Image (tube, rainbow, N blue to C red; front, side, top):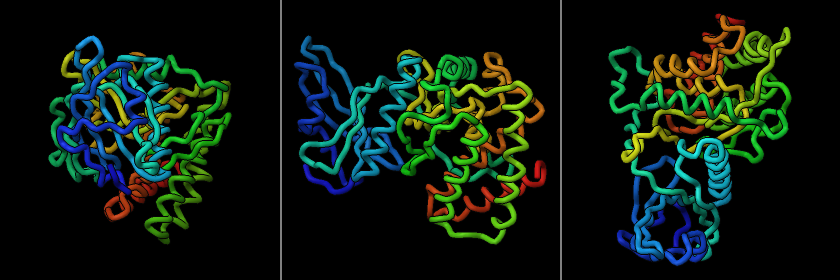
Length: 348
Protein backbone atom coordinates (compact mmCIF):
# COMPACT_ATOMS: atom_id res chain seq x y z
CA UNK A 1 0.00 0.00 0.00
CA UNK A 2 1.57 3.26 -1.09
CA UNK A 3 -0.10 6.59 -1.81
CA UNK A 4 0.71 10.24 -1.18
CA UNK A 5 -2.84 11.50 -1.64
CA UNK A 6 -6.19 10.05 -0.56
CA UNK A 7 -7.62 10.42 -4.06
CA UNK A 8 -4.92 8.03 -5.31
CA UNK A 9 -5.71 5.46 -2.65
CA UNK A 10 -7.03 2.19 -4.07
CA UNK A 11 -9.16 -0.24 -2.07
CA UNK A 12 -8.07 -2.89 -4.58
CA UNK A 13 -11.29 -4.56 -5.68
CA UNK A 14 -11.73 -7.63 -3.50
CA UNK A 15 -8.46 -6.86 -1.74
CA UNK A 16 -8.28 -8.38 1.75
CA UNK A 17 -5.27 -6.36 2.91
CA UNK A 18 -5.87 -4.08 5.85
CA UNK A 19 -3.42 -1.64 7.44
CA UNK A 20 -2.39 -2.91 10.90
CA UNK A 21 -3.75 0.21 12.63
CA UNK A 22 -7.13 -0.34 10.99
CA UNK A 23 -7.04 -4.04 11.86
CA UNK A 24 -6.65 -3.24 15.56
CA UNK A 25 -9.95 -1.30 15.46
CA UNK A 26 -11.93 -4.21 14.01
CA UNK A 27 -13.88 -6.63 16.23
CA UNK A 28 -11.62 -9.10 18.01
CA UNK A 29 -11.25 -12.40 16.19
CA UNK A 30 -12.86 -11.23 12.96
CA UNK A 31 -11.63 -12.11 9.46
CA UNK A 32 -11.52 -9.61 6.60
CA UNK A 33 -13.43 -10.92 3.58
CA UNK A 34 -12.94 -7.98 1.22
CA UNK A 35 -12.40 -4.25 0.91
CA UNK A 36 -13.79 -2.26 -1.99
CA UNK A 37 -14.66 1.28 -3.00
CA UNK A 38 -18.15 2.39 -2.07
CA UNK A 39 -19.96 5.69 -2.56
CA UNK A 40 -18.46 9.04 -3.52
CA UNK A 41 -17.26 12.16 -1.77
CA UNK A 42 -16.01 15.62 -2.74
CA UNK A 43 -13.07 15.39 -0.35
CA UNK A 44 -12.32 11.76 0.57
CA UNK A 45 -11.96 8.22 -0.75
CA UNK A 46 -14.73 6.03 0.67
CA UNK A 47 -15.07 2.29 0.89
CA UNK A 48 -16.62 -0.77 2.48
CA UNK A 49 -14.88 -3.44 4.56
CA UNK A 50 -16.66 -6.80 4.71
CA UNK A 51 -15.71 -8.97 7.68
CA UNK A 52 -16.70 -12.28 9.23
CA UNK A 53 -17.02 -12.15 13.02
CA UNK A 54 -15.61 -14.80 15.31
CA UNK A 55 -19.08 -16.36 15.62
CA UNK A 56 -19.34 -16.75 11.84
CA UNK A 57 -21.79 -13.90 11.15
CA UNK A 58 -21.10 -11.27 8.50
CA UNK A 59 -20.70 -7.56 9.14
CA UNK A 60 -19.79 -4.53 7.05
CA UNK A 61 -18.01 -1.32 7.99
CA UNK A 62 -17.76 2.00 6.15
CA UNK A 63 -14.35 3.64 5.84
CA UNK A 64 -13.10 7.06 4.74
CA UNK A 65 -9.49 7.82 3.87
CA UNK A 66 -7.92 11.30 3.83
CA UNK A 67 -4.33 12.47 3.54
CA UNK A 68 -2.06 15.11 5.05
CA UNK A 69 -2.53 17.15 8.22
CA UNK A 70 -5.77 18.75 7.05
CA UNK A 71 -7.17 15.29 6.35
CA UNK A 72 -6.24 14.17 9.87
CA UNK A 73 -8.05 17.17 11.34
CA UNK A 74 -11.11 16.59 9.16
CA UNK A 75 -11.26 12.93 10.19
CA UNK A 76 -10.92 13.74 13.88
CA UNK A 77 -13.60 16.44 13.73
CA UNK A 78 -16.03 14.16 11.95
CA UNK A 79 -15.46 11.32 14.41
CA UNK A 80 -16.09 13.58 17.41
CA UNK A 81 -19.16 15.07 15.72
CA UNK A 82 -20.67 11.69 14.89
CA UNK A 83 -19.89 10.44 18.38
CA UNK A 84 -21.67 13.44 19.92
CA UNK A 85 -24.82 12.80 17.85
CA UNK A 86 -24.66 9.04 18.43
CA UNK A 87 -24.44 9.54 22.20
CA UNK A 88 -27.73 11.45 22.13
CA UNK A 89 -29.56 9.65 19.29
CA UNK A 90 -27.93 6.31 18.41
CA UNK A 91 -30.52 5.60 15.70
CA UNK A 92 -29.89 8.89 13.88
CA UNK A 93 -26.32 8.22 12.66
CA UNK A 94 -24.23 5.19 11.75
CA UNK A 95 -22.27 4.18 14.85
CA UNK A 96 -18.75 5.70 14.77
CA UNK A 97 -16.10 3.06 15.45
CA UNK A 98 -12.67 4.67 15.28
CA UNK A 99 -10.37 7.15 13.62
CA UNK A 100 -6.60 7.09 13.29
CA UNK A 101 -3.51 7.08 11.09
CA UNK A 102 -2.19 4.32 8.84
CA UNK A 103 0.89 2.49 10.07
CA UNK A 104 2.07 1.78 6.53
CA UNK A 105 1.31 5.29 5.19
CA UNK A 106 1.97 7.76 8.03
CA UNK A 107 0.40 10.67 6.14
CA UNK A 108 -2.87 8.80 5.50
CA UNK A 109 -5.77 8.81 7.98
CA UNK A 110 -8.99 6.83 8.36
CA UNK A 111 -12.48 7.09 9.80
CA UNK A 112 -14.53 3.93 10.42
CA UNK A 113 -18.23 3.60 11.23
CA UNK A 114 -20.85 0.90 10.89
CA UNK A 115 -22.10 0.34 7.35
CA UNK A 116 -25.77 1.14 6.80
CA UNK A 117 -27.37 0.36 3.44
CA UNK A 118 -28.90 3.72 2.55
CA UNK A 119 -30.88 5.44 -0.13
CA UNK A 120 -29.09 8.77 -0.54
CA UNK A 121 -30.18 11.70 -2.67
CA UNK A 122 -28.42 12.38 -5.95
CA UNK A 123 -26.27 15.51 -5.72
CA UNK A 124 -27.25 18.40 -7.95
CA UNK A 125 -25.70 21.84 -8.50
CA UNK A 126 -25.03 24.06 -5.49
CA UNK A 127 -26.24 27.09 -7.48
CA UNK A 128 -29.80 28.13 -6.76
CA UNK A 129 -32.28 27.52 -9.61
CA UNK A 130 -33.56 30.67 -11.30
CA UNK A 131 -37.15 29.47 -11.25
CA UNK A 132 -39.29 26.83 -9.59
CA UNK A 133 -39.36 24.88 -12.87
CA UNK A 134 -35.59 24.38 -12.61
CA UNK A 135 -35.83 22.74 -9.17
CA UNK A 136 -35.62 18.95 -9.12
CA UNK A 137 -38.56 17.10 -7.61
CA UNK A 138 -38.15 15.81 -4.04
CA UNK A 139 -38.25 12.15 -4.97
CA UNK A 140 -37.16 9.68 -2.32
CA UNK A 141 -36.63 12.35 0.33
CA UNK A 142 -36.78 11.61 4.05
CA UNK A 143 -40.16 11.47 5.71
CA UNK A 144 -40.61 15.03 7.07
CA UNK A 145 -42.35 14.01 10.30
CA UNK A 146 -39.91 11.28 11.33
CA UNK A 147 -36.80 13.16 10.25
CA UNK A 148 -37.81 16.47 11.81
CA UNK A 149 -38.79 14.80 15.08
CA UNK A 150 -35.32 13.30 15.38
CA UNK A 151 -33.60 16.55 14.51
CA UNK A 152 -35.73 18.38 17.07
CA UNK A 153 -34.77 15.79 19.70
CA UNK A 154 -31.08 16.36 18.93
CA UNK A 155 -31.44 20.11 19.37
CA UNK A 156 -33.61 19.90 22.48
CA UNK A 157 -31.74 17.17 24.34
CA UNK A 158 -28.19 18.34 23.71
CA UNK A 159 -26.34 20.44 26.27
CA UNK A 160 -23.15 22.45 25.88
CA UNK A 161 -20.55 21.25 28.41
CA UNK A 162 -20.02 24.79 29.71
CA UNK A 163 -23.16 26.55 28.53
CA UNK A 164 -21.29 28.32 25.73
CA UNK A 165 -21.25 28.25 21.93
CA UNK A 166 -18.51 26.20 20.17
CA UNK A 167 -17.34 22.58 20.01
CA UNK A 168 -14.54 20.98 21.96
CA UNK A 169 -12.39 20.59 18.82
CA UNK A 170 -12.30 22.33 15.45
CA UNK A 171 -14.61 20.75 12.88
CA UNK A 172 -14.42 21.08 9.11
CA UNK A 173 -17.19 21.84 6.64
CA UNK A 174 -15.77 20.31 3.49
CA UNK A 175 -12.01 20.75 3.71
CA UNK A 176 -12.13 24.14 5.45
CA UNK A 177 -12.08 24.65 9.22
CA UNK A 178 -14.90 26.39 11.04
CA UNK A 179 -14.35 29.20 13.53
CA UNK A 180 -14.04 27.63 16.97
CA UNK A 181 -13.79 30.00 19.94
CA UNK A 182 -15.93 29.67 23.04
CA UNK A 183 -18.44 32.51 23.40
CA UNK A 184 -21.26 33.26 25.86
CA UNK A 185 -23.22 35.31 23.31
CA UNK A 186 -24.70 33.84 20.15
CA UNK A 187 -24.51 37.21 18.40
CA UNK A 188 -20.78 37.46 19.09
CA UNK A 189 -20.14 33.84 18.13
CA UNK A 190 -22.04 34.13 14.87
CA UNK A 191 -20.35 37.43 13.94
CA UNK A 192 -16.93 35.83 14.44
CA UNK A 193 -18.00 32.80 12.41
CA UNK A 194 -19.28 35.04 9.63
CA UNK A 195 -16.03 37.04 9.56
CA UNK A 196 -14.07 33.78 9.39
CA UNK A 197 -16.13 32.52 6.43
CA UNK A 198 -15.64 35.85 4.63
CA UNK A 199 -11.90 35.68 5.26
CA UNK A 200 -11.72 32.22 3.71
CA UNK A 201 -13.80 33.32 0.71
CA UNK A 202 -11.81 36.50 0.08
CA UNK A 203 -8.52 34.61 0.29
CA UNK A 204 -9.45 32.36 -2.63
CA UNK A 205 -11.61 34.67 -4.78
CA UNK A 206 -10.22 38.11 -4.09
CA UNK A 207 -11.92 41.31 -3.10
CA UNK A 208 -14.82 43.10 -4.74
CA UNK A 209 -15.56 46.84 -4.44
CA UNK A 210 -19.10 46.05 -3.32
CA UNK A 211 -17.75 44.40 -0.17
CA UNK A 212 -16.48 47.79 1.01
CA UNK A 213 -20.10 48.92 1.26
CA UNK A 214 -21.84 45.70 2.26
CA UNK A 215 -19.55 44.21 4.90
CA UNK A 216 -19.79 47.18 7.33
CA UNK A 217 -23.59 47.15 6.97
CA UNK A 218 -23.66 43.42 7.65
CA UNK A 219 -21.68 43.61 10.89
CA UNK A 220 -22.74 47.02 12.17
CA UNK A 221 -26.43 46.82 11.37
CA UNK A 222 -27.79 43.52 10.03
CA UNK A 223 -26.31 41.09 12.55
CA UNK A 224 -27.16 43.22 15.62
CA UNK A 225 -30.64 43.89 14.24
CA UNK A 226 -31.44 40.20 13.75
CA UNK A 227 -29.52 38.44 16.53
CA UNK A 228 -29.38 40.86 19.45
CA UNK A 229 -33.14 40.62 20.12
CA UNK A 230 -32.66 36.88 20.74
CA UNK A 231 -30.64 37.79 23.83
CA UNK A 232 -32.51 40.93 24.94
CA UNK A 233 -35.49 41.69 27.20
CA UNK A 234 -34.99 38.54 29.24
CA UNK A 235 -34.61 36.24 26.23
CA UNK A 236 -31.69 33.84 25.80
CA UNK A 237 -30.37 31.34 23.28
CA UNK A 238 -29.68 27.76 24.36
CA UNK A 239 -26.51 26.36 22.77
CA UNK A 240 -27.82 23.30 20.92
CA UNK A 241 -25.77 20.65 19.14
CA UNK A 242 -26.25 21.09 15.39
CA UNK A 243 -25.13 18.79 12.59
CA UNK A 244 -23.49 21.81 10.98
CA UNK A 245 -23.76 20.82 7.30
CA UNK A 246 -27.22 19.32 7.00
CA UNK A 247 -27.96 19.54 3.31
CA UNK A 248 -29.93 16.75 1.65
CA UNK A 249 -26.84 14.87 0.40
CA UNK A 250 -25.70 14.36 4.01
CA UNK A 251 -28.85 12.43 4.85
CA UNK A 252 -30.42 9.17 3.80
CA UNK A 253 -32.92 6.43 4.55
CA UNK A 254 -31.83 3.10 6.03
CA UNK A 255 -33.00 0.50 3.50
CA UNK A 256 -33.60 -2.11 6.23
CA UNK A 257 -35.32 -0.07 8.96
CA UNK A 258 -36.50 2.98 6.94
CA UNK A 259 -35.03 5.17 9.67
CA UNK A 260 -33.84 8.67 8.81
CA UNK A 261 -30.05 8.92 9.02
CA UNK A 262 -27.53 11.76 8.85
CA UNK A 263 -23.76 11.64 8.34
CA UNK A 264 -20.74 13.82 7.45
CA UNK A 265 -21.40 15.98 10.51
CA UNK A 266 -19.29 19.01 11.51
CA UNK A 267 -20.97 19.78 14.81
CA UNK A 268 -20.86 22.69 17.22
CA UNK A 269 -23.14 24.20 19.86
CA UNK A 270 -25.27 26.82 18.16
CA UNK A 271 -28.64 28.52 17.96
CA UNK A 272 -30.76 25.63 16.71
CA UNK A 273 -32.25 27.70 13.87
CA UNK A 274 -28.77 28.02 12.36
CA UNK A 275 -29.26 24.48 11.01
CA UNK A 276 -31.97 25.79 8.68
CA UNK A 277 -29.84 28.37 6.90
CA UNK A 278 -28.55 25.38 4.98
CA UNK A 279 -32.14 24.56 4.00
CA UNK A 280 -32.87 28.02 2.61
CA UNK A 281 -31.43 27.66 -0.91
CA UNK A 282 -33.94 25.93 -3.19
CA UNK A 283 -31.37 23.39 -4.40
CA UNK A 284 -31.26 21.84 -0.94
CA UNK A 285 -34.70 20.16 -1.21
CA UNK A 286 -35.53 20.41 2.50
CA UNK A 287 -38.62 22.50 1.88
CA UNK A 288 -41.27 24.17 4.00
CA UNK A 289 -42.88 20.88 5.05
CA UNK A 290 -39.71 19.91 6.93
CA UNK A 291 -39.69 23.18 8.85
CA UNK A 292 -43.40 22.88 9.58
CA UNK A 293 -42.86 19.37 10.95
CA UNK A 294 -39.87 20.53 13.01
CA UNK A 295 -41.78 23.40 14.58
CA UNK A 296 -44.40 20.99 15.89
CA UNK A 297 -41.66 20.01 18.37
CA UNK A 298 -39.64 23.23 18.74
CA UNK A 299 -41.25 26.64 18.39
CA UNK A 300 -39.67 29.49 16.48
CA UNK A 301 -37.38 31.57 18.67
CA UNK A 302 -38.82 34.92 19.75
CA UNK A 303 -39.15 37.44 18.31
CA UNK A 304 -40.90 35.35 15.68
CA UNK A 305 -41.24 38.29 13.28
CA UNK A 306 -37.45 38.09 12.73
CA UNK A 307 -37.48 34.37 11.93
CA UNK A 308 -37.25 34.67 8.14
CA UNK A 309 -34.53 37.29 8.39
CA UNK A 310 -32.49 35.14 10.77
CA UNK A 311 -32.66 32.16 8.44
CA UNK A 312 -31.59 34.33 5.51
CA UNK A 313 -28.65 35.57 7.59
CA UNK A 314 -27.68 31.98 8.40
CA UNK A 315 -28.08 31.15 4.71
CA UNK A 316 -25.50 33.83 3.91
CA UNK A 317 -23.02 32.17 6.27
CA UNK A 318 -23.46 28.83 4.48
CA UNK A 319 -23.29 30.33 0.99
CA UNK A 320 -20.11 32.23 1.89
CA UNK A 321 -18.43 29.06 3.11
CA UNK A 322 -19.56 27.16 -0.02
CA UNK A 323 -18.09 29.90 -2.23
CA UNK A 324 -14.78 29.49 -0.38
CA UNK A 325 -14.90 25.71 -0.78
CA UNK A 326 -15.46 25.59 -4.54
CA UNK A 327 -12.71 27.89 -5.68
CA UNK A 328 -13.24 27.43 -9.42
CA UNK A 329 -16.99 28.03 -9.38
CA UNK A 330 -17.45 31.69 -10.26
CA UNK A 331 -21.25 31.53 -9.94
CA UNK A 332 -21.10 31.26 -6.14
CA UNK A 333 -19.70 34.74 -5.41
CA UNK A 334 -22.66 36.53 -7.13
CA UNK A 335 -25.05 34.30 -5.19
CA UNK A 336 -23.40 35.31 -1.92
CA UNK A 337 -23.35 38.99 -2.86
CA UNK A 338 -27.04 38.78 -3.70
CA UNK A 339 -27.72 37.48 -0.19
CA UNK A 340 -25.76 40.38 1.31
CA UNK A 341 -27.57 42.98 -0.79
CA UNK A 342 -30.94 41.58 0.19
CA UNK A 343 -30.13 41.60 3.91
CA UNK A 344 -28.71 45.15 3.69
CA UNK A 345 -31.85 46.35 1.95
CA UNK A 346 -34.19 44.77 4.50
CA UNK A 347 -32.29 45.32 7.74
CA UNK A 348 -29.52 47.84 7.05
